[in-house]
Image 1 (cartoon, rainbow, N blue to C red):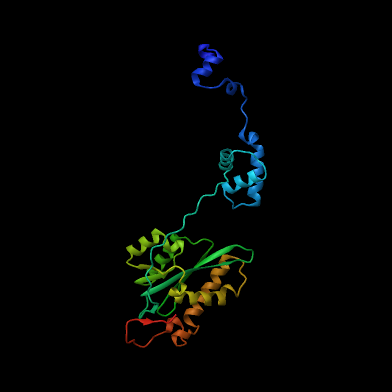
Image 2 (cartoon, rainbow, N blue to C red):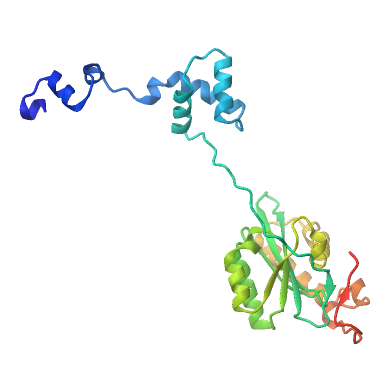
Length: 271
């Protein structure tokens, strides 16, 4: 306004509703202006990283700092110290289904995840699938990250090798709760049955298998690479399915198990 229209400073400030003191004041970076508050706040955050902003404000006042709570909160937000609240995951009510042994292969599968580490500390996960009828290991997928898309890829591979089951019993992990997996189950007419939270015994077959796999493979070797984990796991799967006697299968391997014709369609297990 001064340069274009030649208006004085007083009239220009009045027109834009700006005080003359603000007009003449030199701009100062907020990190310089609020340096003392930032230093005191960072000291508290380093000492107590899980406190909230109101605890920080109360502590700053307790040690003699007179800063306004609005100023402290503004700086707290500008420094990015506010923690986003994590919402509690709400799971739908899961019906309790008795653990049973199917009367034929490819009726009920069980799936679960396990985790371990290589010798240099890199974590990896395994995705295990077995047939509840004869405890046959159908797949063990090994990688550092196994998301729902990877689970679907493994199931699609099994689909080309054998008939899909009527039901797959899983827990309430995020990979099994993914909408993409539920959509896959509907498209392939497979029920994705989630056990009740905190009840691993409702998926007893895969839990028992996980113990065997950890005892005979994961805890037995010091792995140097994922390729070594996959190689040893594949070799062990062959032995497990074709040679290793299984106590619950009349001491026969899963692939050669042939039970006598049952009287009822379902055997209930006592877990």
